[in-house]
Length: 315
Image (cartoon, one colour):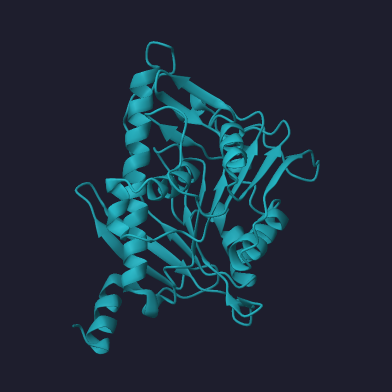
Protein backbone atom coordinates (compact mmCIF):
# COMPACT_ATOMS: atom_id res chain seq x y z
CA UNK A 1 0.00 0.00 0.00
CA UNK A 2 1.54 3.30 -1.05
CA UNK A 3 1.76 6.04 1.62
CA UNK A 4 0.22 9.45 1.03
CA UNK A 5 3.72 10.94 0.80
CA UNK A 6 4.85 8.41 -1.80
CA UNK A 7 1.63 8.96 -3.78
CA UNK A 8 2.22 12.72 -3.79
CA UNK A 9 5.80 12.20 -4.98
CA UNK A 10 4.63 9.88 -7.79
CA UNK A 11 1.98 12.34 -8.94
CA UNK A 12 4.51 15.16 -8.91
CA UNK A 13 6.73 13.06 -11.17
CA UNK A 14 3.85 12.52 -13.59
CA UNK A 15 2.43 16.02 -13.50
CA UNK A 16 3.89 19.41 -14.32
CA UNK A 17 2.44 22.49 -12.64
CA UNK A 18 2.30 25.44 -15.08
CA UNK A 19 1.12 28.82 -13.86
CA UNK A 20 -0.66 31.71 -15.53
CA UNK A 21 -3.99 32.72 -17.01
CA UNK A 22 -5.60 30.14 -19.29
CA UNK A 23 -2.88 27.62 -18.51
CA UNK A 24 -3.87 24.26 -17.07
CA UNK A 25 -3.45 23.73 -13.34
CA UNK A 26 -1.31 20.69 -14.16
CA UNK A 27 -0.31 18.45 -17.02
CA UNK A 28 -0.02 14.70 -16.41
CA UNK A 29 1.36 11.74 -18.31
CA UNK A 30 -1.42 9.13 -18.19
CA UNK A 31 -0.34 6.41 -20.62
CA UNK A 32 2.61 5.06 -22.59
CA UNK A 33 1.88 3.74 -26.08
CA UNK A 34 4.18 2.19 -28.66
CA UNK A 35 3.90 5.27 -30.86
CA UNK A 36 3.65 8.06 -28.29
CA UNK A 37 3.10 9.15 -24.71
CA UNK A 38 -0.34 10.47 -23.82
CA UNK A 39 -0.90 13.48 -21.59
CA UNK A 40 -3.87 15.20 -20.04
CA UNK A 41 -4.37 18.78 -18.85
CA UNK A 42 -6.40 19.69 -15.78
CA UNK A 43 -8.14 23.07 -15.58
CA UNK A 44 -9.50 23.64 -12.08
CA UNK A 45 -12.67 25.67 -11.43
CA UNK A 46 -12.09 29.41 -11.23
CA UNK A 47 -11.49 30.77 -7.71
CA UNK A 48 -14.80 31.82 -6.18
CA UNK A 49 -16.93 29.90 -8.69
CA UNK A 50 -19.83 27.77 -7.50
CA UNK A 51 -18.74 24.13 -7.67
CA UNK A 52 -21.86 22.80 -5.95
CA UNK A 53 -25.49 23.02 -7.08
CA UNK A 54 -28.23 22.32 -4.55
CA UNK A 55 -25.85 20.29 -2.42
CA UNK A 56 -24.45 18.23 -5.30
CA UNK A 57 -20.94 18.54 -6.73
CA UNK A 58 -20.68 19.64 -10.34
CA UNK A 59 -19.11 17.02 -12.62
CA UNK A 60 -15.68 17.06 -14.19
CA UNK A 61 -15.87 17.61 -17.96
CA UNK A 62 -13.40 15.32 -19.76
CA UNK A 63 -12.88 16.72 -23.25
CA UNK A 64 -11.74 14.80 -26.35
CA UNK A 65 -10.52 17.09 -29.15
CA UNK A 66 -11.49 16.92 -32.83
CA UNK A 67 -9.47 16.79 -36.03
CA UNK A 68 -10.60 13.88 -38.19
CA UNK A 69 -8.35 11.40 -36.33
CA UNK A 70 -5.38 12.94 -38.16
CA UNK A 71 -4.68 16.16 -36.29
CA UNK A 72 -5.68 18.23 -33.26
CA UNK A 73 -4.44 19.22 -29.80
CA UNK A 74 -5.99 18.60 -26.40
CA UNK A 75 -5.70 22.26 -25.36
CA UNK A 76 -5.83 24.09 -28.67
CA UNK A 77 -6.28 27.86 -28.34
CA UNK A 78 -9.69 27.63 -29.97
CA UNK A 79 -11.01 25.61 -27.05
CA UNK A 80 -9.67 27.83 -24.28
CA UNK A 81 -12.57 30.34 -24.12
CA UNK A 82 -14.97 27.42 -23.61
CA UNK A 83 -12.75 25.87 -20.94
CA UNK A 84 -12.70 29.23 -19.17
CA UNK A 85 -16.50 29.46 -19.40
CA UNK A 86 -16.82 26.03 -17.82
CA UNK A 87 -14.27 26.89 -15.12
CA UNK A 88 -16.03 30.16 -14.33
CA UNK A 89 -19.24 28.18 -13.88
CA UNK A 90 -17.61 25.83 -11.38
CA UNK A 91 -16.68 22.89 -13.61
CA UNK A 92 -13.27 21.22 -13.63
CA UNK A 93 -12.09 20.43 -17.18
CA UNK A 94 -9.73 17.61 -18.14
CA UNK A 95 -8.49 17.51 -21.74
CA UNK A 96 -6.85 14.35 -23.05
CA UNK A 97 -4.57 13.08 -25.79
CA UNK A 98 -5.40 10.04 -27.89
CA UNK A 99 -3.69 8.23 -30.74
CA UNK A 100 -4.55 9.62 -34.18
CA UNK A 101 -5.60 6.44 -35.94
CA UNK A 102 -6.08 7.89 -39.44
CA UNK A 103 -2.86 9.87 -39.59
CA UNK A 104 -1.05 8.75 -42.75
CA UNK A 105 -3.94 6.50 -43.82
CA UNK A 106 -5.22 7.00 -47.37
CA UNK A 107 -8.97 7.52 -47.19
CA UNK A 108 -11.50 7.33 -50.04
CA UNK A 109 -15.28 7.47 -50.03
CA UNK A 110 -16.31 5.98 -53.37
CA UNK A 111 -18.63 2.94 -53.17
CA UNK A 112 -15.66 0.66 -53.90
CA UNK A 113 -13.55 2.10 -51.09
CA UNK A 114 -16.26 2.77 -48.52
CA UNK A 115 -15.86 -0.43 -46.50
CA UNK A 116 -12.08 -0.08 -46.39
CA UNK A 117 -12.39 3.49 -45.15
CA UNK A 118 -15.07 2.43 -42.66
CA UNK A 119 -12.76 -0.25 -41.22
CA UNK A 120 -9.96 2.29 -40.85
CA UNK A 121 -12.31 4.75 -39.14
CA UNK A 122 -13.64 2.09 -36.77
CA UNK A 123 -10.07 1.23 -35.80
CA UNK A 124 -9.35 4.91 -35.17
CA UNK A 125 -12.44 5.24 -32.97
CA UNK A 126 -11.58 2.06 -31.06
CA UNK A 127 -8.05 3.10 -30.15
CA UNK A 128 -9.38 6.54 -29.23
CA UNK A 129 -11.85 4.88 -26.84
CA UNK A 130 -9.04 2.76 -25.37
CA UNK A 131 -7.06 5.93 -24.70
CA UNK A 132 -10.08 7.70 -23.19
CA UNK A 133 -10.56 4.73 -20.85
CA UNK A 134 -6.88 4.93 -19.89
CA UNK A 135 -7.39 8.59 -18.98
CA UNK A 136 -10.41 7.67 -16.84
CA UNK A 137 -8.39 4.95 -15.11
CA UNK A 138 -5.62 7.47 -14.36
CA UNK A 139 -8.13 10.00 -13.00
CA UNK A 140 -9.65 7.29 -10.81
CA UNK A 141 -6.26 6.25 -9.45
CA UNK A 142 -5.33 9.87 -8.66
CA UNK A 143 -8.81 11.15 -7.81
CA UNK A 144 -7.90 12.66 -4.45
CA UNK A 145 -4.84 14.54 -5.73
CA UNK A 146 -6.58 15.84 -8.85
CA UNK A 147 -9.94 16.58 -7.25
CA UNK A 148 -11.81 14.38 -9.71
CA UNK A 149 -14.66 12.11 -8.60
CA UNK A 150 -14.50 9.17 -11.07
CA UNK A 151 -18.22 8.55 -10.61
CA UNK A 152 -18.97 12.12 -11.70
CA UNK A 153 -17.29 12.54 -15.10
CA UNK A 154 -19.07 13.87 -18.19
CA UNK A 155 -17.21 12.83 -21.34
CA UNK A 156 -17.40 15.42 -24.08
CA UNK A 157 -15.93 15.72 -27.53
CA UNK A 158 -15.82 17.60 -30.80
CA UNK A 159 -16.11 15.83 -34.18
CA UNK A 160 -13.72 12.85 -33.99
CA UNK A 161 -13.64 13.40 -30.22
CA UNK A 162 -17.45 13.36 -30.16
CA UNK A 163 -17.40 10.02 -31.98
CA UNK A 164 -14.98 8.69 -29.37
CA UNK A 165 -17.17 10.05 -26.55
CA UNK A 166 -20.38 8.49 -27.86
CA UNK A 167 -18.58 5.20 -28.54
CA UNK A 168 -16.99 5.17 -25.08
CA UNK A 169 -20.47 5.12 -23.54
CA UNK A 170 -21.73 2.66 -26.17
CA UNK A 171 -18.99 0.15 -25.34
CA UNK A 172 -19.79 0.45 -21.63
CA UNK A 173 -23.50 -0.13 -22.23
CA UNK A 174 -22.72 -3.29 -24.17
CA UNK A 175 -20.12 -4.57 -21.67
CA UNK A 176 -17.53 -5.16 -24.39
CA UNK A 177 -14.04 -6.48 -23.69
CA UNK A 178 -12.70 -3.00 -24.35
CA UNK A 179 -14.84 -1.56 -21.53
CA UNK A 180 -13.71 -4.18 -19.00
CA UNK A 181 -10.64 -2.08 -18.11
CA UNK A 182 -12.87 0.32 -16.14
CA UNK A 183 -14.46 -2.40 -14.05
CA UNK A 184 -18.02 -3.60 -13.69
CA UNK A 185 -20.50 -0.91 -12.81
CA UNK A 186 -18.55 2.11 -14.07
CA UNK A 187 -20.47 4.66 -16.08
CA UNK A 188 -20.09 8.24 -17.14
CA UNK A 189 -22.35 10.84 -15.56
CA UNK A 190 -23.18 12.15 -19.02
CA UNK A 191 -22.05 12.59 -22.62
CA UNK A 192 -21.88 15.86 -24.57
CA UNK A 193 -21.21 15.33 -28.28
CA UNK A 194 -20.57 18.25 -30.63
CA UNK A 195 -21.05 16.88 -34.18
CA UNK A 196 -20.56 13.24 -33.28
CA UNK A 197 -21.85 9.85 -34.42
CA UNK A 198 -21.39 6.15 -33.73
CA UNK A 199 -19.24 4.10 -36.08
CA UNK A 200 -20.58 0.54 -36.20
CA UNK A 201 -19.46 -2.71 -37.82
CA UNK A 202 -22.65 -4.53 -36.82
CA UNK A 203 -25.45 -2.43 -38.28
CA UNK A 204 -27.64 0.06 -36.45
CA UNK A 205 -26.47 0.71 -32.88
CA UNK A 206 -28.24 -1.24 -30.15
CA UNK A 207 -27.75 -0.77 -26.41
CA UNK A 208 -27.85 -3.67 -23.95
CA UNK A 209 -28.64 -1.28 -21.11
CA UNK A 210 -29.82 2.29 -20.79
CA UNK A 211 -27.02 4.78 -21.46
CA UNK A 212 -26.24 7.73 -19.23
CA UNK A 213 -27.85 11.08 -20.16
CA UNK A 214 -26.58 12.28 -23.53
CA UNK A 215 -26.61 15.64 -25.30
CA UNK A 216 -26.02 15.72 -29.06
CA UNK A 217 -25.47 19.02 -30.89
CA UNK A 218 -25.30 18.72 -34.68
CA UNK A 219 -25.92 20.62 -37.91
CA UNK A 220 -28.60 19.20 -40.21
CA UNK A 221 -26.41 19.90 -43.27
CA UNK A 222 -23.34 18.15 -41.82
CA UNK A 223 -21.84 15.69 -44.29
CA UNK A 224 -18.45 15.48 -42.56
CA UNK A 225 -19.79 13.54 -39.60
CA UNK A 226 -23.06 12.60 -41.19
CA UNK A 227 -26.20 13.99 -39.54
CA UNK A 228 -28.23 11.01 -40.75
CA UNK A 229 -26.32 7.87 -41.72
CA UNK A 230 -23.86 6.52 -44.22
CA UNK A 231 -23.68 2.75 -44.46
CA UNK A 232 -22.83 -0.28 -46.59
CA UNK A 233 -23.60 -3.82 -45.45
CA UNK A 234 -23.04 -3.92 -41.66
CA UNK A 235 -20.63 -1.00 -41.74
CA UNK A 236 -21.97 2.46 -41.09
CA UNK A 237 -21.76 5.81 -39.36
CA UNK A 238 -24.96 6.68 -37.52
CA UNK A 239 -25.57 10.32 -36.68
CA UNK A 240 -27.99 12.01 -34.28
CA UNK A 241 -30.98 11.69 -36.60
CA UNK A 242 -30.73 7.89 -36.26
CA UNK A 243 -29.63 7.89 -32.62
CA UNK A 244 -32.57 10.13 -31.66
CA UNK A 245 -34.99 7.50 -32.97
CA UNK A 246 -33.21 4.75 -31.00
CA UNK A 247 -33.24 6.82 -27.81
CA UNK A 248 -36.92 7.76 -28.17
CA UNK A 249 -38.03 4.20 -28.98
CA UNK A 250 -36.31 2.85 -25.87
CA UNK A 251 -37.16 5.72 -23.54
CA UNK A 252 -33.54 6.77 -23.02
CA UNK A 253 -32.76 10.21 -21.61
CA UNK A 254 -31.25 12.38 -24.34
CA UNK A 255 -31.19 16.00 -25.46
CA UNK A 256 -30.86 16.33 -29.24
CA UNK A 257 -30.33 19.78 -30.75
CA UNK A 258 -30.56 19.86 -34.54
CA UNK A 259 -29.21 23.16 -35.84
CA UNK A 260 -31.03 23.88 -39.09
CA UNK A 261 -28.81 24.20 -42.19
CA UNK A 262 -25.59 24.24 -40.18
CA UNK A 263 -22.70 22.15 -41.43
CA UNK A 264 -19.77 20.80 -39.42
CA UNK A 265 -19.44 24.19 -37.72
CA UNK A 266 -21.42 22.80 -34.78
CA UNK A 267 -18.30 20.83 -33.86
CA UNK A 268 -16.85 24.09 -32.53
CA UNK A 269 -19.90 26.15 -31.55
CA UNK A 270 -19.25 25.78 -27.83
CA UNK A 271 -19.94 29.32 -26.60
CA UNK A 272 -23.12 29.85 -28.62
CA UNK A 273 -24.64 26.61 -27.31
CA UNK A 274 -23.73 27.22 -23.66
CA UNK A 275 -27.39 27.70 -22.61
CA UNK A 276 -28.22 24.19 -23.88
CA UNK A 277 -25.12 22.75 -22.20
CA UNK A 278 -25.89 24.50 -18.91
CA UNK A 279 -29.45 23.13 -18.76
CA UNK A 280 -28.24 19.64 -19.63
CA UNK A 281 -25.51 19.67 -16.99
CA UNK A 282 -27.69 21.15 -14.28
CA UNK A 283 -30.94 19.33 -14.97
CA UNK A 284 -29.95 15.98 -16.46
CA UNK A 285 -26.56 15.35 -14.89
CA UNK A 286 -26.49 17.11 -11.52
CA UNK A 287 -30.17 16.97 -10.52
CA UNK A 288 -30.79 13.68 -12.31
CA UNK A 289 -33.97 14.86 -14.03
CA UNK A 290 -35.23 12.43 -16.69
CA UNK A 291 -35.45 15.24 -19.21
CA UNK A 292 -35.43 14.54 -22.96
CA UNK A 293 -35.36 17.16 -25.70
CA UNK A 294 -35.53 16.83 -29.46
CA UNK A 295 -35.37 20.33 -30.92
CA UNK A 296 -34.86 21.79 -34.37
CA UNK A 297 -32.99 25.04 -33.74
CA UNK A 298 -33.09 27.88 -36.27
CA UNK A 299 -31.26 30.67 -34.49
CA UNK A 300 -29.43 33.39 -36.47
CA UNK A 301 -27.41 34.24 -33.35
CA UNK A 302 -25.54 30.94 -33.63
CA UNK A 303 -22.50 31.56 -35.87
CA UNK A 304 -22.31 29.68 -39.16
CA UNK A 305 -18.86 28.95 -40.61
CA UNK A 306 -18.78 28.13 -44.30
CA UNK A 307 -15.14 27.04 -44.06
CA UNK A 308 -15.85 24.25 -41.54
CA UNK A 309 -13.98 21.00 -42.13
CA UNK A 310 -15.20 18.68 -44.91
CA UNK A 311 -14.13 15.16 -45.83
CA UNK A 312 -12.32 16.59 -48.85
CA UNK A 313 -10.43 19.18 -46.80
CA UNK A 314 -9.45 16.60 -44.18
CA UNK A 315 -8.49 13.68 -46.38
